[in-house]
Length: 150
Picture 1 (cartoon, rainbow, N blue to C red):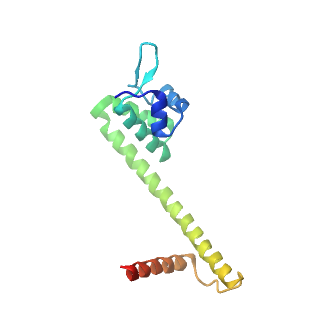
Picture 2: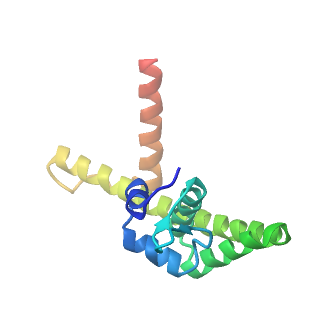
Picture 3: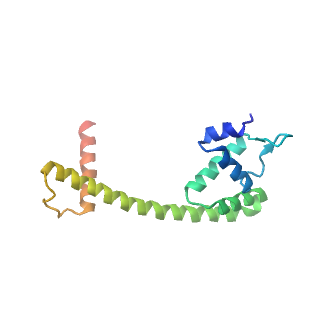
Protein backbone atom coordinates (compact mmCIF):
# COMPACT_ATOMS: atom_id res chain seq x y z
CA UNK A 1 0.00 0.00 0.00
CA UNK A 2 1.24 3.49 -0.78
CA UNK A 3 0.57 6.64 1.16
CA UNK A 4 0.69 10.31 0.26
CA UNK A 5 2.71 12.79 2.28
CA UNK A 6 -0.52 14.09 3.82
CA UNK A 7 -1.62 10.60 4.85
CA UNK A 8 1.77 9.83 6.40
CA UNK A 9 1.76 13.16 8.23
CA UNK A 10 -1.66 12.37 9.67
CA UNK A 11 -0.70 8.79 10.63
CA UNK A 12 2.46 9.95 12.42
CA UNK A 13 1.07 13.18 13.86
CA UNK A 14 3.64 15.42 12.16
CA UNK A 15 3.43 18.04 9.44
CA UNK A 16 4.10 17.46 5.74
CA UNK A 17 6.84 20.10 6.01
CA UNK A 18 8.57 17.97 8.65
CA UNK A 19 8.48 15.02 6.25
CA UNK A 20 9.93 17.18 3.49
CA UNK A 21 12.66 18.33 5.88
CA UNK A 22 13.50 14.72 6.82
CA UNK A 23 13.70 13.85 3.13
CA UNK A 24 15.90 16.87 2.41
CA UNK A 25 18.23 15.87 5.28
CA UNK A 26 18.62 12.37 3.82
CA UNK A 27 16.60 10.48 6.41
CA UNK A 28 14.34 8.97 3.72
CA UNK A 29 16.76 7.80 1.04
CA UNK A 30 14.49 5.11 -0.36
CA UNK A 31 11.21 7.04 -0.56
CA UNK A 32 9.61 6.68 -3.98
CA UNK A 33 8.47 9.50 -6.22
CA UNK A 34 5.93 9.57 -8.98
CA UNK A 35 7.08 10.65 -12.46
CA UNK A 36 5.94 14.16 -11.54
CA UNK A 37 8.13 14.14 -8.38
CA UNK A 38 5.44 13.60 -5.73
CA UNK A 39 6.65 11.50 -2.79
CA UNK A 40 4.88 8.22 -2.13
CA UNK A 41 5.48 6.26 1.07
CA UNK A 42 5.20 2.54 1.77
CA UNK A 43 5.11 0.54 4.99
CA UNK A 44 8.92 0.38 5.19
CA UNK A 45 9.03 4.19 5.00
CA UNK A 46 6.47 4.42 7.81
CA UNK A 47 8.53 2.03 9.94
CA UNK A 48 11.67 4.08 9.34
CA UNK A 49 9.82 7.31 10.15
CA UNK A 50 8.54 5.82 13.42
CA UNK A 51 12.14 4.94 14.29
CA UNK A 52 13.27 8.45 13.35
CA UNK A 53 10.61 9.88 15.68
CA UNK A 54 11.76 7.55 18.47
CA UNK A 55 15.42 8.47 17.99
CA UNK A 56 14.56 12.17 17.85
CA UNK A 57 12.47 11.88 21.04
CA UNK A 58 15.41 10.13 22.73
CA UNK A 59 17.53 13.21 22.08
CA UNK A 60 19.49 12.06 19.05
CA UNK A 61 20.32 14.84 16.61
CA UNK A 62 19.20 14.83 12.98
CA UNK A 63 22.88 14.52 12.04
CA UNK A 64 23.24 11.36 14.17
CA UNK A 65 19.97 9.93 12.83
CA UNK A 66 21.29 10.55 9.31
CA UNK A 67 24.46 8.66 10.26
CA UNK A 68 22.32 5.74 11.44
CA UNK A 69 20.35 5.74 8.17
CA UNK A 70 23.60 5.80 6.19
CA UNK A 71 24.98 2.89 8.23
CA UNK A 72 21.77 0.95 7.62
CA UNK A 73 22.16 1.42 3.88
CA UNK A 74 25.70 0.06 4.07
CA UNK A 75 24.38 -3.20 5.49
CA UNK A 76 25.94 -5.67 7.87
CA UNK A 77 29.40 -4.09 7.79
CA UNK A 78 28.07 -1.38 10.14
CA UNK A 79 26.30 -3.55 12.70
CA UNK A 80 28.82 -2.71 15.43
CA UNK A 81 28.54 1.04 14.82
CA UNK A 82 24.76 0.84 15.05
CA UNK A 83 24.92 -1.30 18.20
CA UNK A 84 27.36 1.16 19.79
CA UNK A 85 25.12 4.10 18.87
CA UNK A 86 22.12 2.47 20.55
CA UNK A 87 24.15 1.62 23.66
CA UNK A 88 25.30 5.26 23.92
CA UNK A 89 21.73 6.46 23.50
CA UNK A 90 20.50 3.96 26.09
CA UNK A 91 23.06 5.30 28.59
CA UNK A 92 21.96 8.86 27.75
CA UNK A 93 18.32 7.93 28.32
CA UNK A 94 19.11 6.19 31.62
CA UNK A 95 20.85 9.34 32.86
CA UNK A 96 17.91 11.53 31.78
CA UNK A 97 15.43 9.13 33.41
CA UNK A 98 17.37 9.26 36.71
CA UNK A 99 17.28 13.06 36.55
CA UNK A 100 13.55 12.97 35.83
CA UNK A 101 12.98 10.61 38.74
CA UNK A 102 14.71 13.04 41.11
CA UNK A 103 12.57 15.86 39.75
CA UNK A 104 9.43 13.73 40.03
CA UNK A 105 10.25 12.87 43.65
CA UNK A 106 10.72 16.54 44.50
CA UNK A 107 7.34 17.34 42.94
CA UNK A 108 5.76 14.38 44.75
CA UNK A 109 7.14 15.74 48.03
CA UNK A 110 5.74 19.21 47.31
CA UNK A 111 2.35 17.67 46.48
CA UNK A 112 2.37 15.97 49.86
CA UNK A 113 3.62 19.11 51.59
CA UNK A 114 0.89 21.36 50.17
CA UNK A 115 -1.81 18.71 50.55
CA UNK A 116 -0.85 18.52 54.23
CA UNK A 117 -0.67 22.33 54.49
CA UNK A 118 -4.18 22.61 53.02
CA UNK A 119 -5.51 20.02 55.47
CA UNK A 120 -3.76 21.73 58.41
CA UNK A 121 -4.61 25.23 57.23
CA UNK A 122 -0.96 26.25 57.60
CA UNK A 123 2.53 25.51 56.35
CA UNK A 124 3.71 25.60 59.97
CA UNK A 125 3.79 21.87 60.76
CA UNK A 126 6.40 19.13 61.25
CA UNK A 127 8.80 19.40 58.29
CA UNK A 128 11.08 16.67 59.61
CA UNK A 129 9.95 14.25 56.94
CA UNK A 130 12.39 14.07 54.07
CA UNK A 131 11.20 13.86 50.47
CA UNK A 132 12.43 10.24 50.35
CA UNK A 133 10.49 9.35 53.52
CA UNK A 134 7.31 10.89 52.07
CA UNK A 135 7.78 8.88 48.87
CA UNK A 136 8.25 5.68 50.91
CA UNK A 137 5.14 6.46 52.96
CA UNK A 138 3.13 7.13 49.78
CA UNK A 139 4.34 3.86 48.22
CA UNK A 140 3.62 1.88 51.38
CA UNK A 141 0.21 3.49 51.63
CA UNK A 142 -0.52 2.58 48.01
CA UNK A 143 0.62 -1.03 48.59
CA UNK A 144 -1.47 -1.26 51.75
CA UNK A 145 -4.52 0.07 49.87
CA UNK A 146 -3.98 -2.45 47.05
CA UNK A 147 -3.73 -5.31 49.57
CA UNK A 148 -6.98 -4.15 51.21
CA UNK A 149 -8.85 -4.11 47.89
CA UNK A 150 -7.60 -7.54 46.76
